[in-house]
Length: 564
Image 1 (cartoon, one colour):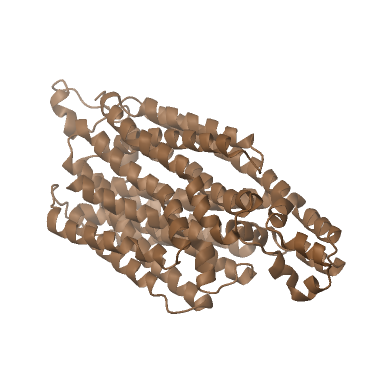
Image 2 (cartoon, one colour):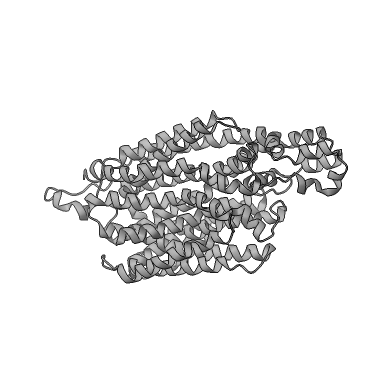
């Protein structure tokens, strides 16, 4: 009961964390919002990131509340909030910016419900399963959680091709079923740990993380005449204030008797290095998903004759080898880690993922799909080999009384890393575009008869606008030139400019420069994650589970853990 219910919950939550990524073209058309208007980039970013930011900020505190008031109680409440928010999102009555605000607020509430689910599901499973079966159970659950991110891309493409409201409506029956089922069937297995709520810790953590993530999203946008705003005063102020608030948070947590964020857990080597590898692997995985969506929707599919309206659907279909590989290897690796520990599987998974990133470097922008699909499959198999054993190892290392807080901490690292990954990979791509995009745009437009003034105006567009166009799978040339400029051109020139392949070919060389930087960074981050995973040590199960195996009067070594 615990495994099936929590697996449905985390699957729905993570599907919704990524489903917007690929459905945004249909959503922007549905609410009649122009994605090329620089003022609308705020709405685009917050539709993608709002869900992740809220769940990242709240998941630790909600996990701690589960330890105090009951994990099943908090989990059930989260299921109810998530279901209601999903229903509200489907009935957006507005268009334009008002419609976008409705969706953003709904996504924030949905992320609040998802945070309850993600914070307590691992703890509920760890309570329900003995150590020798926990790896398989947590592996299945974690595979569902991470594969939900990939499934969201496929599902978003399919549903958006029919009607954008289905993106929010289809999960509602499953969420409603899960809500009722959890209220009827789940029961508390672990004793509650009554303690006062750490209001100072919760508030300082929320403020610090929100400010930091606001700074990351603002840094992507152009400012002060620069392609990005990382050096602007508002961005530096947001990031600096966020870091100060987080420093206050950690200083307070180290001294309070009932902390929200249990820093003492980092003395457990398996937890510390497992959480670090979770964070680093999530940066690599989030960046890969983001890059694939832009690459397929904005360039490869239009170059191969696909209509822009159909690119979300086909992008989701073409990414299926990644999802399939993850679903194949995840449960198997989780089961094997029950016998042999997580160290070799998780480390090997990250090493192979780094190898896959290197493989992507050798593909041209207009790649052969067979080679692309094989690299996707390799990436999925490797990520599954890492994810399930790593989650099981992290949860096995925790004391029973701290599983909610520890699981929430691990989920925070994972969610925050996805927000950070979008900021990093966005910036790397924009940096690559900035080097050659302006000259390429201007020269190609002049070559096709566009008046000099119009060509220079479009050539001076911020790279982020061009990237958003590629990300949303739209052809911006008609909108950017307008009927007046197009009316001055000959019929062959108009046909060339408005052809599906013109814009992708126009940006393919600058985009490839950014791809190289992004994939190199992804390879490096996965290698560091592999090193962190290796340093976790041998298999470790917390002493409450293993004390009967220990020689009498022998004190445990919390830094090295137990052989298991």
